[in-house]
Length: 353
Image (cartoon, rainbow, N blue to C red; front, side, top):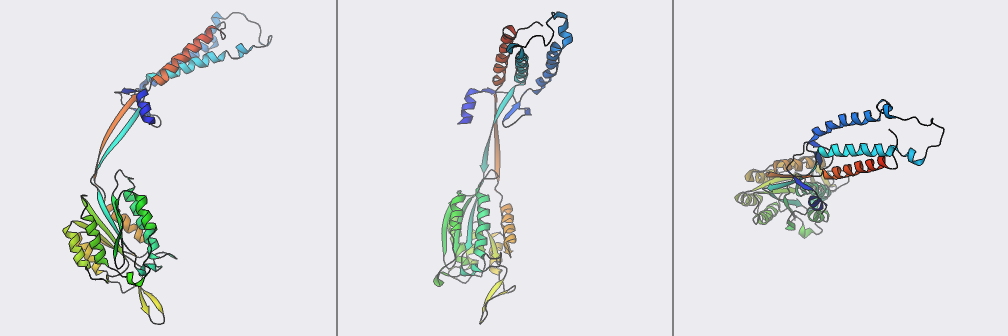
């Protein structure tokens, strides 16, 4: 609303902004500022005693009489004249205000974020005293905010799918980062044994089904898990073929430092060996994506940052720029100040010169 009011009050200009000042303001003809130097010299010369001595009449010696209020304020006429001079010169320099608009044409990327919420996500090996799921929620949430936040002139649609034994679409494709991260914040691990499992193939097939209705030029799945597929209604290889047929690129992330194995009388024992990530690697290879292994929070953040760079949104930018003359904002006050200075010098501030 403020900009609309300004445009109505200002004059549309054909001038180009050449000397930036502050905010949206600039000068179109800054060379007129050089006029301040001779103008200041003439003004000061007129105030020099040598220039006034010839016409000065004898006066009562200083201190003989108390100075009146008019005498003490007589300098105001000179100040008003100086301000008027500066205002007029600045008006000649043609101040303008710019209005720049950017029209961004984005090709768009639709990203399905697939997150494992199986019982093994309770282990505390990615960050001290925090479960795998808690760390993943932070990192995935930050990634979603960056991709959906329009920070570089274009935003991407993201959807959130979670899985254990069964997949679930928690948040359909949206540009509302707050909505998606809200669902992510509320995400919890499975509570019942019959819900538990790691159905990687079924989860990927669900993501393919959701992306099938997208008309985006680029379709991407980022699938994160900490285990191996153990549900075979749809195998990971079958789901990868479905994704490849739809032109969907899949990035797979194995997010675990240790492989945990339950040992009698010892409980869950961590080991740095025992991983089998071959299925995740094949999914990435078949679909043209990449496989990553995150062993801690920092590596997980770096992985999502790398995916972000690999999936840059192609965009074209058109720039529209208008300028509006605002010299009247200085010229009219300047003329008013000069008139007030002349009136003062001719009446209450009049003195022998």
